[in-house]
Length: 285
Ligand code: ZN
Image 1: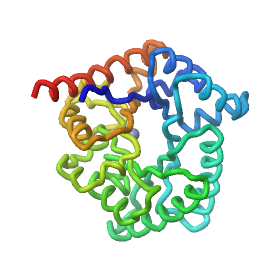
Image 2: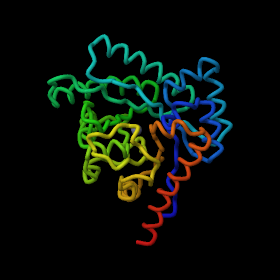
Image 3: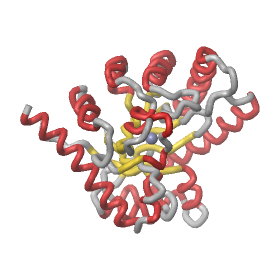
């Protein structure tokens, strides 16, 4: 196999200083295949632009939208709060439909005091069904992302796999984020338990060498610069014929101070290098 994985860019990477317009310009310039759009950045863009301009940008350029990031805190809400979440989700669906973006990421809430895992999971399953129902109407997909920090209600790979399997709908899958996988101390062997087609997005990044329980999103590093065994992870994805993209997603506050263009250029180069190494080890082995 001589295919380098498709590469995408998540807007969290230059979140502080960039805009959607600027990100689009540079991800196109540096040859990314996809962009994962943040809803806050999209809303900011829509203050001065029409959604049709964005649609036109994607039709005239190589870069395509991959996913919309994210419906946050979608589970463990009161009835009224969840109704509001669903309204927000519908709005996101309409935007996705307008620009040709197929996936919306759903991120979990933090745990409530004394809540049992079983109750968390039951509530999460109900919410995912309702979101899937709405997404289905727009012909879209929902991707559940587990957040590796302990305080989150869906915080490890196995739980995420089980929830997706339990929901068992064709338009519900998951995001595999290498940093969250590492921070949650999840087991790579657990990936065997999911159908690779259920991985709707792969977030690629690396981590500082710190105790896992102390990690925060800002401890993310460029792929290849940290301690995550990205080779093993990517090898697994290749072995299973993952045909989606690797989306570089960093939240490092030091990188946020960089020149936006330089950051987008370096993120592409480092991501590509890690993906290429995997290809080489496979060819040699
Ligand atoms: Zn992520």
